[in-house]
Amino acid sequence: MALRPDLAVIAESVVSGSRVLDVGCGDGALLAALRDGKGCDARGMEIDPANVAECVARGLSVIQGDADKDLAFYPDASVDYAILSQTLQTTMRPDRVLEELLRIGRRAFVSFPNFGHWKVRTSLLWNGRMPVTRLLPIAWYATPNIHHATVNDFRDMVRERGIKVEQAWYLSGDRRCSPAAASFRAEHAVFLLAR
Image (spheres, rainbow, N blue to C red):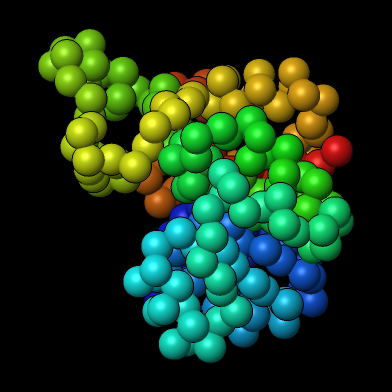
């Protein structure tokens, strides 16, 4: 089974044999790929009990937890990579969650939908409505997304906190796109961060 495009970028970039914590790991697809394909000590935290049960049934080391509350229980620098894929925008305090990721991990991967993408802008401009797209398939009133950030918003947040961007990837659909005008062109972004 092919990984979602942002997860594929992360899986390619994680060094073999690393210790990894995937926060908001969903069904565990990335954890399984890192464990089986790269020999990583891959662990996860997931808020949805059905996803936790699915992960455990697949032999993955996953606990039920809330990124906003439960990351405080992890020791400093306990993993090589802390990963937060398509979860940042669902947290109550993305800034605090990001700080916790970089406390727990030597590096952090963060991926999120870019709400500055041209399709989102066009939907708001022409229809006056929040978009429903292939990559944002849930209506505004049912979406778990509570913080709608753009690529530029995220860049500003990490710069203000003195966080280093080691690498960034931008995705349009299932393909990578150039960083030129990424805030307008990219549907999703993936950042590798460090202190």
